[in-house]
Length: 356
View (cartoon, one colour):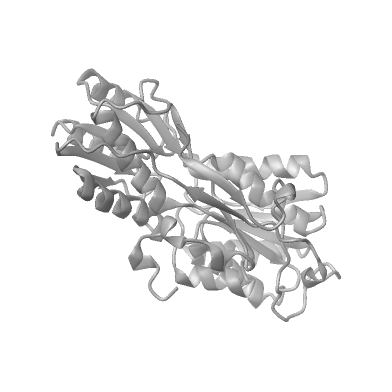
């Protein structure tokens, strides 16, 4: 069963090259003599249509224990808030356990053990570490509790299904967009948050694969902050530009981080030299950054949709309905040209869209 229909906007034939032009802020560069605003690269935005599978209405009420690696920003909270709201409408009670960060592996394992003791009907697991959680998930399996890999994969072989985003592929697309924007040559800073977690590792791998495919593109600085604090990204970018005056691009995990990159670039007077690409909008302020061209290349995660999809698939499993082995949910590519056409309720729950 297909859960996602894909629709390309503005240049579908070139969808593998996700590049666009930047409305650059004024200011002198620190390295290259070519202004980014001189780059005339056609915009290739991508907006997907997201469709849920049929939701079974059994008249029963089920209980799901949902484990999340973190709840630090709007997208992460939207995963669970959307699931809880959708579940409440369709007979699924949702108990959320927040590990508090990708480094909190032992805490999440303890949370899963605690939840198993309450005998939930199903587990949905956004793992802090894909391998470390396997033994405790095997305990759930022995008790007959089905497990869904949710948001990120685990190595648990008996999971009924996986709902995720291919972060290696999405990061590769985003990095390729930066490279194409720079004309195939440039030096990048990667500052992906959640250092050491599967998410951060996948993002870094995707960027490295893109750079390997584009010989003129180099990752000059690769640092990963432990969390998604923009001030830590600002420090990384400030130091990176100071040590490498030829830096042309910065990549961050989420838009809330990218604010730190924008501030560092502005402080260095490098607005016309350095372009910022990011994943995941987290607020209306992020939308403004896209529209203004300060963060012109954004890989947008439909977090609220993934929350509803998790509830839907859990209900289908509990009702004995057929489910696919994998639901891989693609990101949108937002640009200043297409952001007004996007339905951001797929990305964020209402509290994060006030004022958009």
